[in-house]
Image 1 (cartoon, rainbow, N blue to C red):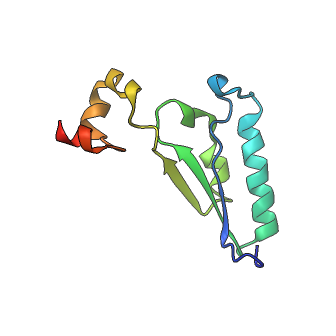
Image 2: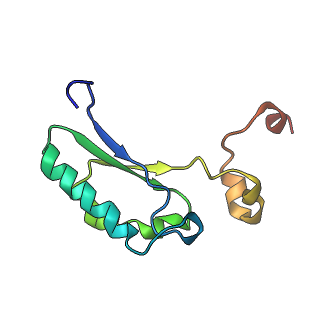
Image 3: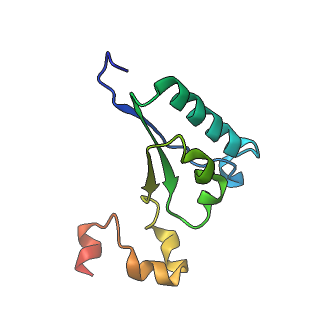
Length: 107
């Protein structure tokens, strides 16, 4: 880590246990133990962050309560909050307008 100037690691697992992503029931624990092992190895020398999806579906397979003792920062993965599926979530389309382009802004 020092050789390349890294300050820490970010873990972005899309998405543990999600059956539509070939997940396995052991995935939640399989995300926790490497975080614990990294913290034990890094001490306070390097940071650890974990990215958790901001959706209502996928976060259920993360265990932030257990990981918070070992993680410096939780980030929210929000790039999937806007897309063709958004029209089915009535309240979401009024709040989140991300990843827009010029034609969308003009309308």
